[in-house]
Image 1 (cartoon, rainbow, N blue to C red):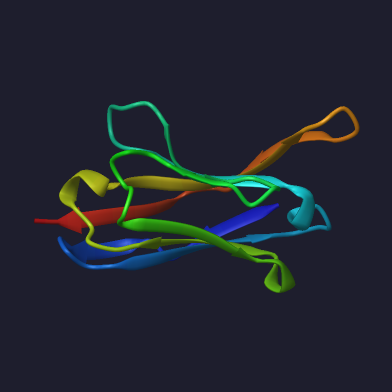
Image 2 (image 1 turned 180 degrees about the horizontal axis):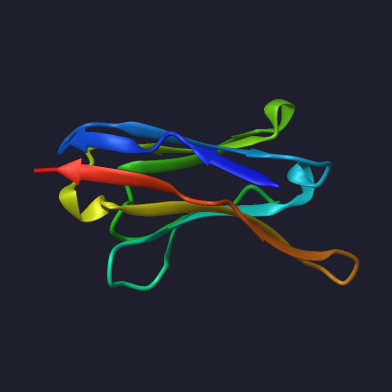
Length: 117
């Protein structure tokens, strides 16, 4: 089970940190990511952190957003700085694995981020 939090209303140029607490013992061995879906648009990848600790970011957030995790707290984070109105969306966390021995794909419920101009 994934529980996302940290969304809210912020002015352009501001910052927010999203958190996603993951229940269970799969956190350390999972790939994880943050996705977002704006009104009328498809869900898109924002950032991902693989089990091998490789990070990937959407071009639109590079240099502004940072994905991280704390294994001791079973929590993943998305630090969002220099927010823009176009960052307004519902943000979802995800953990997944697609190995031969372990396949799963879990999503959080989403947290709304609204950036005012």
